[in-house]
Length: 185
Ligand SMILES: C[S@@+](CC[C@H](N)C(=O)[O-])C[C@H]1O[C@@H](n2cnc3c(N)ncnc32)[C@H](O)[C@@H]1O
Image 1 (tube, protein in one colour):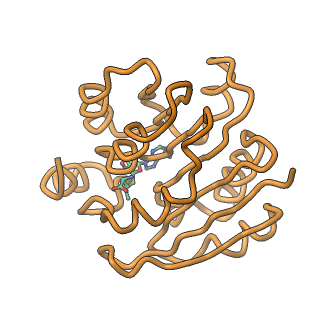
Image 2 (image 1 turned 60 degrees about the vertical axis):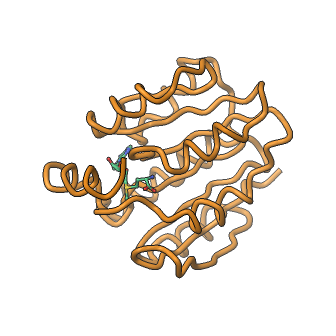
């Protein structure tokens, strides 16, 4: 697990978009926004090899569920090998299909959607469509937590979500923009 695997996958699949996993500082910065005391539905777009997933599944409450949506087959296989719990499901699919993925599992809404997918590769229309879809699958008060190398999410998130907080994590390669967008209650 780690940089070598990311480099290998990055060379084959440009959507991997990074040659190294997120830092533990970034993982902690984002996950401290999650309340693990209650049962939660948590969705992750683009878990890669699971640096965030691993942190989350170790902490989430026994009745919580974690749905990991990953396009890359190599990462999907590795994640499936790591997860034996019924509370964690790895889905090889694209984040754009999140509505169907949740509906097929009778999940009415998510508490958190975490995303590390490269929104910079989307054109403006597709980016906005996925942000709106994500808002739709969140419960009222639910949060969309996004980390991106470029600061192109701030404007559309503020247009689509009721409340948005922005911060940066400098202890990551490269330093990264983090947004927490909350759906109105
Ligand atoms: C920058 S890497 C982040 C990996 C990991 N979450 C981390 O923080 O180290 C982006 C990940 O998103 C996946 N990905 C890219 N586009 C996707 C999409 N449309 N739906 C789901 N996963 C996607 C890539 O395969 C890759 O694993």
